Image 1: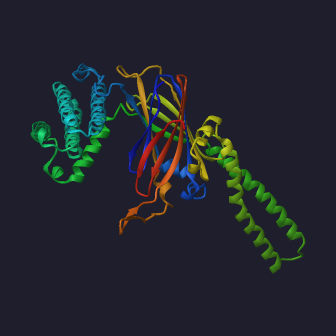
Image 2 (image 1 turned 120 degrees about the vertical axis):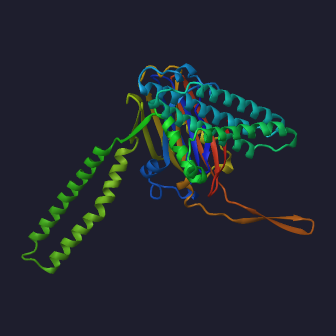
Image 3 (image 1 turned 60 degrees about the vertical axis):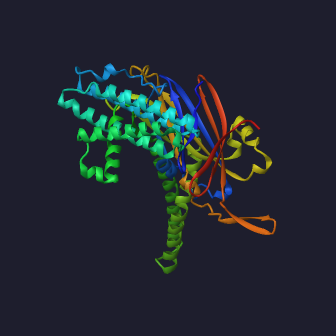
Amino acid sequence: MKTAQLSQDENLSFKISHQLLPQEYQRLDLYFSLPVEMGISPSTLNEEDYFYSNIKTHSAYYADQLHLPLVRSRFISQNKGEQTDYRLNLNLYSYQIRIALDADIKQTLMLKNAEEFYPASVELAEQTLVLLKKLRRYSPPDKKLSSFFENADNYLSWHAEQSFLKLLAKGPKSSDFSTEREFLLSFCRQENAYRVANEYNSQVTLDDPNRITNKMRLLQRLIEYGVVFKKQTRYLNLNLKRLVRGSVTAVIMAFVMFLVLNARSNFAEITVALIALLGVIYGLREIFKDDLTSLIWRKIQKGRPKWQNLFTHSVNNKRILSQVLWLEYIQSKDLPKDVNELFQRRRQQNKQAARLLHFRCDNKVIVKEYLPGYDEIQQQIFFNLTPFVRFLKKGAGKLYSLDGQKISGQSVERRYQINLVLKNKSKQGEQLQRYKITLNRSEIVNIEALSEE
């Protein structure tokens, strides 16, 4: 069984990545144990607001061997057929190069030893150069297709240069590998000169870092056409919510009219007392209507799915994947037995009062097969934890220590821990894993996958 992977995305966000086979059904559950001292509750963080603003999903074709693009170069050389066919095949190849390069750059940066880092970097640059040459070998003569090629070529050249500059900036420094370092710098200069020679970007754009960066983001989205699926989000309970609101309003109005008619029958004529009584009745109606509606609605929607994401192919609008989602606060008694047992394995000092938040995602792949060369879809779900740290204390303080006769103080920060259990279930099996997410007000400090204690 291919397991779901949890990893950090940005400073205060993480992502869940997993693969889906054709016609596969998969259920993914996340159980957040949020310490009460973080101040997270239904009154401070509404589930629907958090979902729309801080949970994002992304689905695209996926190749298992990321360092070897599966889309063969002959697809790029096609000059016959529809215009959309060339663009789709070009985008598949370009997207695969970008994903492969990002994955390999990240893996290379994990090498902290210069003796391992520089040979791996040179090998990666040589592989990237081969892939770029293979792309450029089949530039289309048709002017209608050349714009697609130039966009992809421009972006991949820029992205490759930026990736290796980042690699050199963050990698280990060593004077013993000046030859390898010069090779990598030469590769970056070569790609820069290539774009200048082809006049891909104006000088005005090149002189402004914001303009060139935003242009490349646009080109990145263009090469995702046909590879990354379009997403449409539907709120499933809209009509039910309207029915509940209308029913509560009807009941309250009937009760109010009953009180009004009784009050009117007890007064022979309109008086100040009657007007005051009617004002009190209508005031009470406004006070209790929203609270009663909210209470009843929370009871009715508990355990019900709230949203549906429909993913379609951006070229032919064919539906690929259906995704049904839940997000709600739950009680300890609502935890599945295996999840509760996993939470209980925490050490005694780590057990504290907590609020439980449950996220569920049911995926159903509709199509029987994918595009040639692709056997899986990769789905990524991004969670932004910025709303979780809104009420956290800065926690500035000092830790004092005694060294002989000298007392020294060291600044410390306040950190919080979120326990999270990931449960992934499909026909292939079941995955159950607990994570400990350590964070402060500005970033996720560490994400640790815990073994059974």
